[in-house]
Length: 266
Ligand SMILES: [Fe+2]
Image 1 (cartoon, helix red, strand yellow):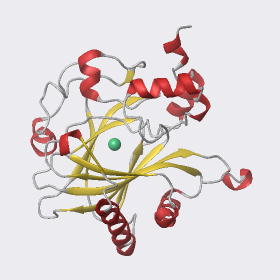
Image 2: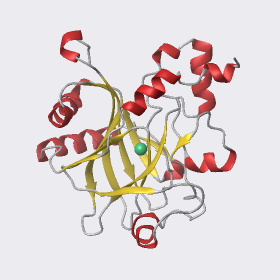
Image 3: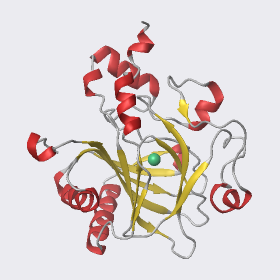
């Protein structure tokens, strides 16, 4: 077995993740207006303190959240309200898109990496050198709570049918360019498969070349106070944004069985 294979997710974990696959859920009521306001205020205060990082050449500003007490009650209440208590918080992030040029097609599966590990090489080194494999969690669901956008123009998220069960998040451009990812993409479909009307409304910020291999599952039109819940392993992308910015809060969780009996701490 090579070093690279040591980093693969074990097949029994992949089997379990696939058995847990669920369709996305769209909720009209995810957060109260008070909770929305509190989250926005928290993010803006972090922004003022220069704690939001700029990524993707200024297209995205984010604040990664690792369970600080001040807003965790809001997260806990919201997710409990939607799916009950059988989950464990892994990470959260405020995500503000300031331009309409963000085209990262991706999964949300690499949230276990500590802050500062920004790429696959760093992730592999962290696991290998630190013998941290036991800390690699098994992703389950991602919750997207829209917080702010221009309601006159709309904001959206596009969910594809493709899924990936490796230990790292996919970035579709990279996959297409050099195939460096160490697992197979489920439901990969050769060629370009997007309907013209969907492309024009939701995907025209991407070249058709970049969308090769993908099929659209659904498009979620954002609603402040609502929520979009998907498998963290399912490939997705922010929809075309004609009037930036837009901002949301994202929560990534793993699955906990019989949480009350086991007294698993969140
Ligand atoms: Fe994402």
